[in-house]
Length: 283
Ligand code: NAP
Image (cartoon, rainbow, N blue to C red; front, side):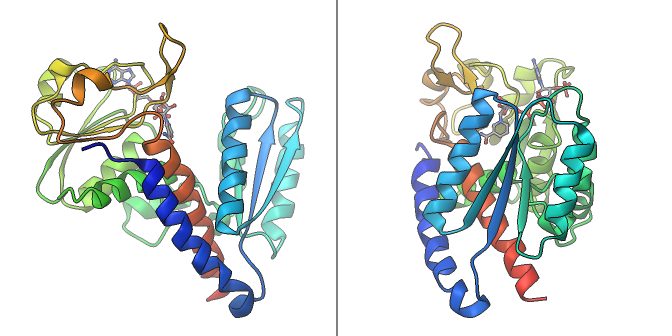
């Protein structure tokens, strides 16, 4: 079974659009997401375009602020301070990565927790680990939604996550743990990785290496979630961290790249923006 993030995203966005359509009457306006894009990295430009398109579909107001790569950290912090204070702004997202002369932590930490739609602010990260109300990072949230949609029982399962980044590996491990999976987190220094991955009933791969997970690393019946977004060095096409052709016949459920986790990330960003808006309106 291949889980289509595209299809689930379309369904979720249609539901959100119906919900957002009721907001002008209830709250006097729709949610407003501001995305800041620094520089001209083509991948970042494409992600930001995708976010804009999703806002259009859902009916969320979207402002994109474009700044040259030469912008200083202070200038960027000033823009964020203005958006933090603006009552008409519900979500603020700074597209990463930023140029080397800007400290990403300073920027992430400057966004108000209640406008941090990415869920990257340390207060949101801490709240997730403390099981307190928070904005959950979009990619991990999307992964859990896909597992639920596919009818995968998480409770009691052996889950293996490869990758321990702050934006994917760690938060998805925490979400799986909260759903009562037994979670093993692997990384670049894990010894004999295939012996660990073969134990997995649910395998989440977030490394950033094309086709890293081969058929022999997966046991029959495993649920495989491929988070990676890479270019195949041979064909130049988009591919995941999992060798799809080799692993798909063994997996009970698998996500494709493209069209798997990626669309769900943007859809969960829409959900987070609505949640931040509603939290403010219902305060
Ligand atoms: P990251 O910060 O670079 O982290 C990569 C992780 O993989 C690290 O924990 C690293 O271990 C581990 N790793 C690297 N080589 C390994 C190896 N040979 N064996 C085992 N573990 C290894 O990456 P990220 O931000 O989490 O992103 C991972 C991938 O997901 C990338 O392809 C990225 O583009 C993609 N991504 C996709 C979405 C989406 O929406 N679809 C969203 C975010 C990210 P150490 O900690 O030991 O270095």
